[in-house]
Image (cartoon, rainbow, N blue to C red; front, side):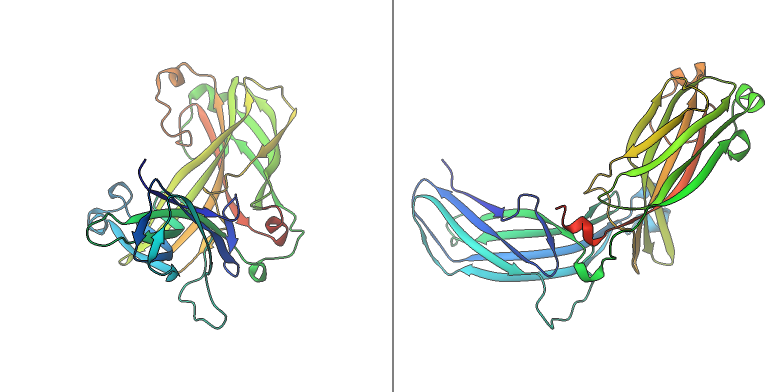
Length: 325
């Protein structure tokens, strides 16, 4: 059996705030006793930005990966050089992300995994063993959420916005039978809500001359990065939720209830070199033979047999959210 090393955190959900110490243990399993030259634990938090060729011009595509924004970077010595006995060795650790009075170069943004923007915090344990032996190393990601001081008090009621969708509100062409016969869908949906609460609202199909096959709610992220003198923005799909399958009854209220995926969403961020925003897209798909032969690549792309409504979605974290972790 080969020697292995793992980093285990004290919290199973791996969620910490910037003012809390990150605690856990380094677990070494070895079939024989081994010597080492000390154990170092590194904390690295950064905003990693990249611009893909498809979302930028020719000049911007040469930038590729932009220099990351460092949030925290420190290394501590957990144990001095010595020897591990055979079997399992557990070494506890505790590291403060920031000290009292320590200047902070960047705000501790919340963990986020997007298409072009990744906000990530990593713990890495390194155990060098000299020139003749391969060093041991293990990395564990932990999740940062906003601290209490930065958060608004509860309750924050969701801000509901009334919407209506008709053939006249569409900016793309529709099939003649859909445009001529007309349709009207009304409802209300939250455009500001807490990350721990579901996206809620309601929708009613008041009229439609063409049968409806599906009504879906799509969550979108909008990532913007400053590259040179330009702002490169890309919108991508996070998740889709179907709230109606088939031709729904007219004038019947349908509830909207969508759970938000944690790692793929964060509080809306407007920083200097980048921003992370979110939108909700309501799509209504009408019955059409044209739809059967089309690939389902982007469910929010305008189609002749679809009606769309996009609304901004502001996500916030509240003090109540912290106690649910």
